[in-house]
Length: 84
Ligand code: SF4
Image (cartoon, rainbow, N blue to C red; front, side):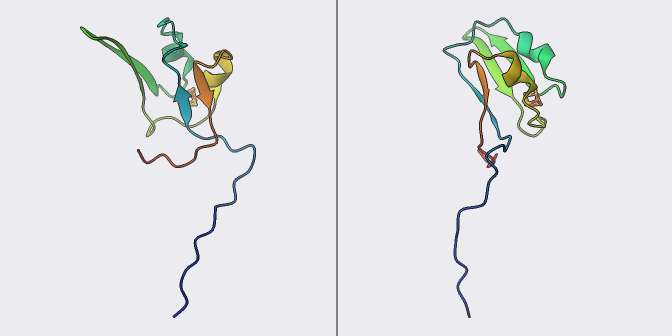
């Protein structure tokens, strides 16, 4: 029996992967909620403050949110593994 060798997956340099949120850059304007065409972004407000939520099972990785926030609040990464 031949052992299966693990090799790194081939990934295109233009791969659109998961969105990364940088809380330290966010001013809490909540505009990204209406920017997302898939409705994947929402905020929860409670006594502890404002919490950013991005639903990876709803996000279609289009990158629209990242394009609207060039300062880096939302960045599109090349990370394709969405298990978290
Ligand atoms: S990449 Fe597209 S679908 Fe995903 S959160 Fe951003 S705007 Fe929404």
